[in-house]
Image (cartoon, rainbow, N blue to C red; front, side):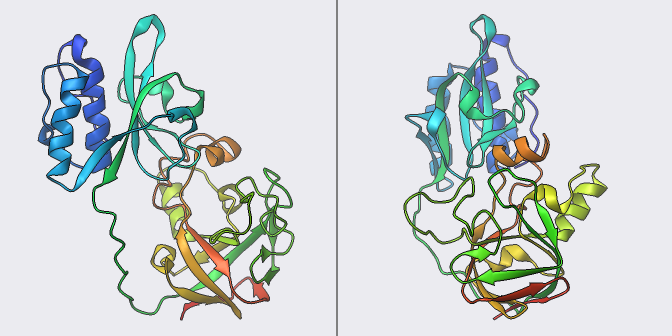
Length: 291
């Protein structure tokens, strides 16, 4: 996403202009490149659908936005006092507000707590899954290890951890089947282990955002390896074989536990979800090497 200011215009069209700012931010184009009809939001939505279709995307109405869970961008129209309505950009599962050009006080709020009048997902029109090209070998090291014995419990830093195939790290809430997002109906890929790059925390610190490894609530802190590039690849952490499944995107739950303002800066930088394929031991300083 990119920062986009509210386009200038009459107060009567503020909701439409706010929606345009959110759409421009999600698509990462200047707001001046979007069609901005002077009519009401309903007419503008038609113009934006045509514009998005020309770029292989669309706006999909969300039937139940309060319960909506999707790790992607979506735009909500939220009721405000005195009958006004504003547009906000949401992200994460569970989702929170990451851009609110008309009402900055909504930034970081959980969408489930907002009076949403309408919502639309920004989605690709092409569902074809294309195989990722295999890149160069990836190498790094383990700089931190952590587990939490229960959902929302403080993370405990370790020097060494035991990994169990199909479960995760011994003593961690996900290995115990007690995590906040532990699947309730059998095992699913991507819930054994989470990793995050130390370089991300360095960048946040340089920008004035205070977040330590424990605050990320990830299991493994790496350095020197692009964890995002491990999606779809197998890799060793020490002698433990793992497989990267998908990005570990931030959510409003993390924002609530570790401090406000974390959701937005961690988008696409929140780390990796992986499966543990073999038993073994992971120590600080252990190599992280792609297979």
